[in-house]
Image (cartoon, rainbow, N blue to C red; front, top):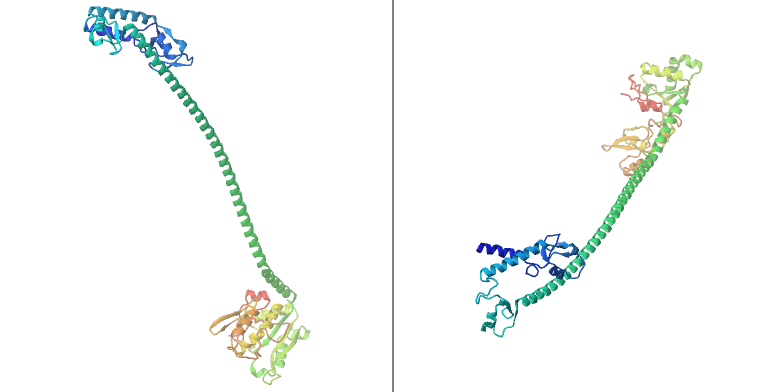
Length: 454
């Protein structure tokens, strides 16, 4: 019996509305979630709002017009009520019967807030207590519950409204954030585009700067080359002038004979005339060779002593003949040195004039020197090699060593100071023993060759 009572109690609980806590009256079902309520309780809970409502039990959003009457549940509620009454009668009204007086609970004491029977109402325990019928109390509490439910509903509506406002705010904020993000995205794209433009401008500027630097470097190199061209051009012009002079005067060659033995210097002219007559007898008879000038020494009181003699050859064939004899080591006259020379450019003659005073001092101090191509001279002075390349070098040397150099007249002439202004002598290389020194390329370029006695 106890087990059957438990099942009946569970059936009664299932037939009870979760809003009014009483048996269902005109039960309806919410299709969205399947929960059941009294129609009046659900309408009172939802109020007059026509918006979307929610299930009071599971809070799921539902449509108000989608309520469905549940007739089977209504029949089950009626059966549960009958079973409950029958069980009360069988067990003496336990649960609906007063335990003290075994009378039905038909009254409700508001002081104790509990149902009582008629006997309890007359007892001293409930004397002067306000007592009302149980059904009236049920309706009253039901009204209070509904009132509280209304308050809760309004609070819920306020909460829902506030939540809607919050949702709207959230949507607005989300829209604002999306708008700001879009603005930031566009600004980022503009910044990237501007940065790309700046990179391109920087690259173009760098390329233009490099191009300008290259152009300036090329211009500087061109200027440097142009600055170096005049000396080279002058040197080439000098070479061209020398070659032109060689071509124009290749038919005229001069022969100098010097270093004759001391015993024959007094009668050198007659000696030379006799030697020339013996060597080129046929050419003298034809008048193709002639003695141009004899140079005399001006010192020592011996005015008739002849230093050397200059002979002019008028044709290229004559020059070639003498050169051929010279290189065959057959042109030896009384152990005298024979030299062949040609006219040299004017700048060498000017060089002789520019360095005349220095050459005189060097000779007076017995300092060995030599001329160097294309200009200047070099010598050893105080154990150091000295080179003079310009008039400024010469003046500086004379000024620095004025006290160290012995003053002299410089009467002993050098190779470029033979006393004739329009000709100069460059040695060829046949010494008094007949040994030959081959000419250098520079000497050939000048049209002259030289030699030195061993």
